[in-house]
Image: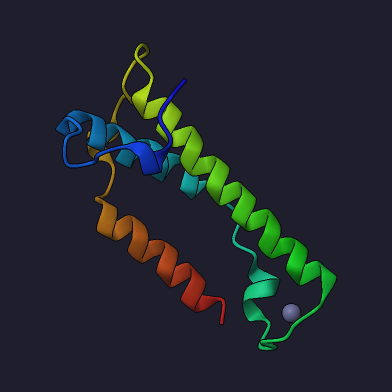
Length: 105
Ligand SMILES: [Zn+2]
């Protein structure tokens, strides 16, 4: 069984494993749909079932995506992600997600 992200001592993980996790998580996060309607909601006490459902779904997908990235990066066999050196760095990945989220408001 693969380790959970919280069980990993990231400082002791080999650099190429951290890199694997970086690219695996980028791949899965890129596929996530942001909960656009819920993100537009301005009501702090919102009880709209659709909004709550969107947020629940997003949280579940985010969690399972990161767990999948962990499994993928820390499995003992299998190929590392081909062509990954063409991908942007982590800061730009986060930045692009941030911009998408910001643009939604
Ligand atoms: Zn709402």
